[in-house]
Length: 68
Image (tube, rainbow, N blue to C red; front, side, top):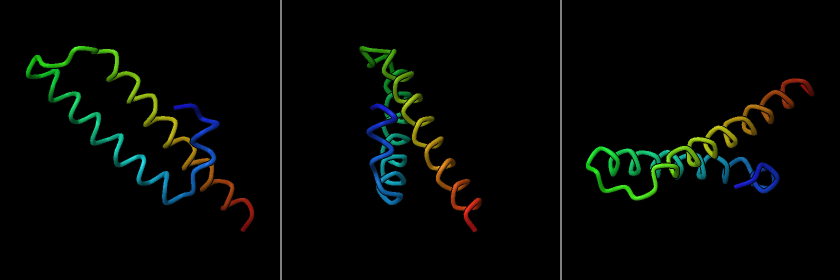
């Protein structure tokens, strides 16, 4: 998922997306531990998406603080 697409989401959608990505990461790690995962690089992609979402959430919080 690209940052441009993530920026279009509302705050509620961002929080929902973050929760779903964390669940997906948990499931991928579980699959890796049991030896069932086929594409190990997918863990890295999910981590990057989590970082992107968290970065955009933080940017929005900082912008709100500057305006107040």
